[in-house]
Image (cartoon, rainbow, N blue to C red; front, top):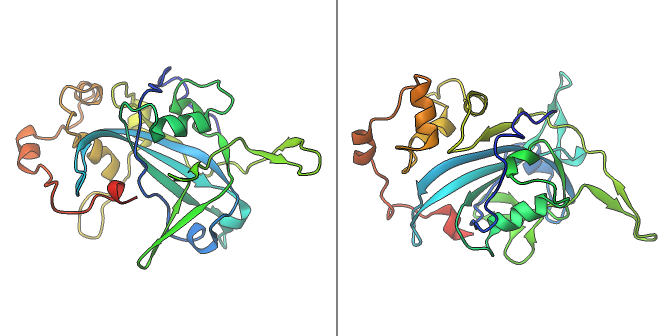
Length: 261
């Protein structure tokens, strides 16, 4: 699958840092097959900047965020439907973009940019990575599948197999991604980017399933941003600033998932 977003941005601020949130697709087949410590193969299929968001809980703050999605394509972690369609799960990571060189944004970028040939996350969309160790965390009756921890760091590496006897490495032929690539650069959006994150349809309660675009339009720094200017120029309905201010999230109501991990 070709990466149509490779030229979306040319540089990344490697001085930035992020906090890693919980991530994972808890439905079959990944949830049912994954075991702690599993070696896995993933493809990077989504990079979406959502602008400044209000987190909640004890360490509530306003921070710019980005969402990364990795489709797990290891045969063990996939299954085939009755009509022959490959069914996969994904691992989702929410990152808070900051300015600390020791943060996880830098660590994720460096781990993924192992060949040192990329300048931005968007350029790596579609690429395969080896996960040396899947990390399963259990909280109550829920199991979370992660690819990063404070102790072990980011579990993403070049898709290579190493022979323990000879020390030689061989490229792993990772299965192709089954999901369409997604990308949104908050200050440099394009029609192709915006369309890639659209989700059609409504939920049973009548609300829109298009939560990603709505999240971006609800960003605290949406007004005056590149994405607002792009949408206005393309005739997209914009949120009412007065209504947005009226429904500003209360930072004391809920625990922030980012501060719990």
